[in-house]
Each structure stands twice: as C-alpha cells, then as structure tokens.
Length: 359
Image (cartoon, rainbow, N blue to C red):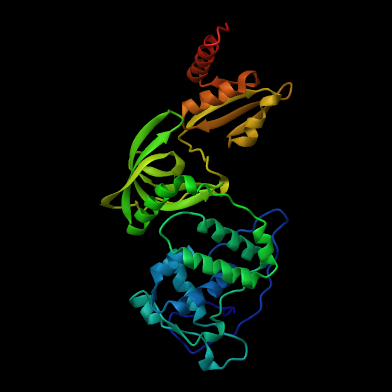
C-alpha cells in the first residue's frame, strides 16, 4: 500500500490514487537510518501497522492512536488523510479505503471501512520473531498480576509461525532475578494495575542508608537480568529507577498516582548510568592499567597523557561513588579535580591504611 503523489485536499473531491511500489536507499554501513515521522517511508510503515489496529479497534480515538504509535495527533490526522486516498492497484472509484474524516476532525474518533484486503498484520522477519519470542519469555519470568496465560499462548503461536527461527530464540537465555523479589514485584504490579502511589523503604548503597520515598509507578523493566521500578519520585522530584532487590519494604497507598506530564521513561538503550549535566564534574588522572575506567563509564572527555596515561573528565551524582572508585583504582588512578574531593579521597585512603597500621 502507498499513497497518492500529492497531499489530498481537506474535503473529498472524488480523486483517488492507487498503490505505488517505492524503492528506498540503504543507509551507509554501520550507520542507523533515522526517519522523520512525516517521511514517506515512515508513514507507509506506520500505516501498514495502524490499519490492522484500527480494524480491530472500531471507534478508536485519535489521541489513543497517537500515543500508541509515538507520533502527534496532527500526524495521525495526516496519516488518515493519506489512508483515505489509498488502495491496491486496479481498484475502481468505490473500492478504496473509507475514512470518516468528519468524525476524526470533529469528535476525534476514527472509523474506517472497505479495508479488509489490507487489514492483515505485517509478517515478521526471522530476527524480529526471535527478538519478540525472547522478550515474551523474559516477560513470562517476571512476577506480577498480568495475564500470564496470554503471554504463554502468544509465545506458542510465535514459535509455531517462526519455524526454525524459534530454535534460535531457544538458544538465547535471559536470567531474571524474579524469585528473590517476587513479593515486591507483585506489589509493584498491583500498583501499576490500580494506578496508585507506592511507598518505598529503599536502601541506597552509596550512602549505606535506608530512605523513605513516595513513588508514582510508571513501569516495571528488566535490565541485565534485574527488575527495576521506574517512577516519579516525590523526594527527588524526578523520574528514578529503583532496583527491586534493594527495596526493604513496599506498600500500595490509597492515593492515585499522578505522574507529571513532563515525566518521560528513560531510554535504557544507553545503559542504566546516564549522567546529568547538573552532576558534579570530576577529573581523574589514570595510568595505563587504569584506562579501563573510560571503557566502563560515560565521560565528557578523555585526553592522552605522556606514558600512555589518560586524563578523564566525567560527571558523578554521588561523591561516595567517586571515593569508592578512587580507592579501588589505588596507584592506577587519582582524583585531581575538584580539589576538595581529591582531599576527601586522600583522607579516606589514609584512614583505610591506618586500619592496617600502614603509614
């Protein structure tokens, strides 16, 4: 399916366009292509997924579809205007997809018809099927109140449809620490289902202390086999991630969760540790054996030093974390800026040595 060459007018004129095969240029090797939501390729891809959804959800709202597909409501209306003028080659004037644009622009309700021939879901590629099966198996290992039977049925259907690709998925093992945090995860899931606020007693290892927090839950995620609650923390007044195995106590409050409109889930593709520009800027001088720090932690800059060393500047939210890292480095690295933090590290090192009667 594709769209007419020209943008359709706001009112129906009787002019229709047939589907047209398009050719796309591949992005350079090693470089991920980026698509604007209003580009022709992104729009066609989105419409091929949107149409089956709209067929199975009569009277869906524009706002709901926009949130589901991650685009603006204005973009959804543009997509529908294109869909209204789309169809398969060889069809006559009365055979194209019908969209009630008056309902879309008036009540914000989407109603389509005459689209059975394009309402089939897209076929998955082998890699997509493998990724989806692995993700569903990981979800099945997460404790909580969601419908586990539906997940298991979806896995069975995908494995049956994927054929040999399902064997590749079976070789991918994702271990989730579900048993150790089953009770906490169940409570978090209940709060997500009821859209209620949570109260956490949460251990902060960097300060070795328990903190009390009210959190409006947003989602339960798995990162590197560990379960995390992501939510709006009223103590920090920001979105935070909480490792469930560090939750000392949790209870659902009789208060509705109110996640602020500006709160956004974190993009975890870049890892859990994502420094903020407001975090303190710390400078390390590393010897060659200490260069591994640059490979493990995001940093602002890394300048070569004579003899193969490295001058590394990174941002740290917690000074205790910096002190532990500096002590771990020993003679392979030292903090040079800020000066007061360097003095704190030196004092901590001397205190540690004094415990062994070493001067």
